[in-house]
Image 1 (cartoon, helix red, strand yellow):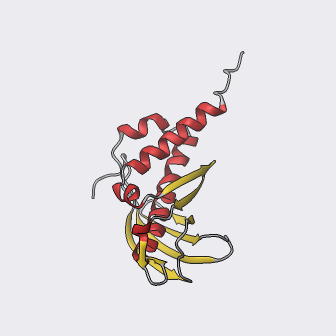
Image 2 (cartoon, rainbow, N blue to C red):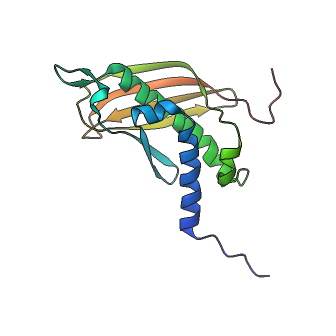
Image 3 (cartoon, rainbow, N blue to C red):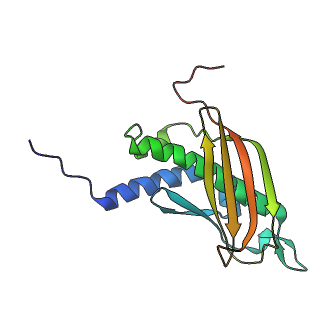
Length: 172
């Protein structure tokens, strides 16, 4: 019995990056804010490149609190969505190339609490989210944001989300 040769790593990486790009392209607000995601395996880091339009207080200058909250919420939603997609892709239940063909179903925010720990300076910001709990109906996610030093957070947030119904779930 001969074993099938595994796919080259580069092909797998391109498919996964394409799946993430498709997920992100479905949310126009991500493009408006300029949020990008760096993927290393299943780990995502959200990046908010600095832009003058993000300033809320030009006297300081400081990032707008609404931009900070949106950045944290987007990081949480994309991490939660990516963790679901990743699990399906790794289990062989979903071909990454087929993501563009299925309707975009993102988790819906139930509540989102932001702690502003210090002023967001006029420079790039980074965030990482951690899914604390993910069930069939609800999920809880914690996200932390920093700028120059990962240990010096400028904001953090916790959100609870209503999970999208799966294709096999009965309609309520």
